[in-house]
Image (cartoon, rainbow, N blue to C red; front, side, top):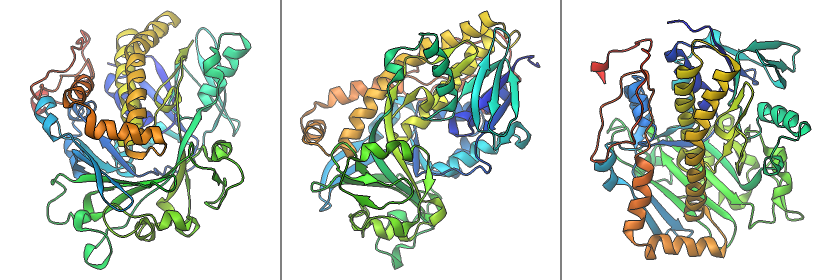
Length: 480
């Protein structure tokens, strides 16, 4: 089946690439526009759980995913003296949902998804300046003077989405933009992230948690975090296959008087760090020797200091980023729709932002397949967008709240965060945690037009409507 519809995708991050993969399976033509001249994924660890793992199995990518990841189902939280103050154990829920969470380096996941998209379908160096649309088409205008036209545009270009900015500017002029959507993103934290070279525990200060050479990445590893009671710092690490370690050192902007310069990690104490957030809106590399000494000297949860990990991390993969939070009310208008951080910016603990971007892609693809695949009339496009929004918005609201709670537990620095952490780890009845997690793990959407993956675990996924229109049939259902 070949669809006459053409979709423009802004952004070749995890959400944009997954969107491209799913549209291809639906038989819908697409092209991806990436502002960078060269694709290079930065970041630290990403965790994929039972919400998204069925999709990878459905796409036939489960084995490839396992090659680049490790099973992970526990989180240990320590104070700066390395006394354990909390423990989160998800192992007991494995039998419930049937999946073990997988942790991997974000660049490795990006490379896996990128390998599924033909190079000819990605246009590099296309920084979108303006979006124009009418009843029949949508057009993007790029900074190099080029322009491209399609039936609809998907903005998957991050928290500072140019697609969203252009769309909201037009809506604001028409007095159609909600007041809340005109407000700026709220900067909560600033992090330095990276992934080490293979670490030899015999010749370094880190524990042998990093040594994965003998178990092929199949042992379950904990994800330790450390919190400081005297400054606004926290740190967490995650072991990856091939004895590499993902690290993330974070400063809480709400409790710090630090200003982070836009081009270095030099700090002063004259104004608040929030004022510098806009200058750090893009992921950027940062040499390890520019990291402040108090960051370097902060205890590493697996031994030594965070500086030991910084020193073993190639400079080109160290990045800094401000972590913001905001849920927009407007996700679509006309022939333009937003997914991922462009419409719901979450604090990225445990890869929450990446997972929700990919879940957006699943639900939006299903809606487009049912409504738009044969005719991209404005009425069909609006019906598809509305269906997508109605399903995903309530889940995004819930995920934003979970994101806030988890950020308080593993990285919060205020007295209230300390109280929340104590309640969570020592006072909250286990049944409340069980009920909260059970509500989350039942949401496991798959492509409606491909054979569903067989249910795993004792608790079934939420019911999902099966498409009556056949898919492209890329794989045999018996292989699932």
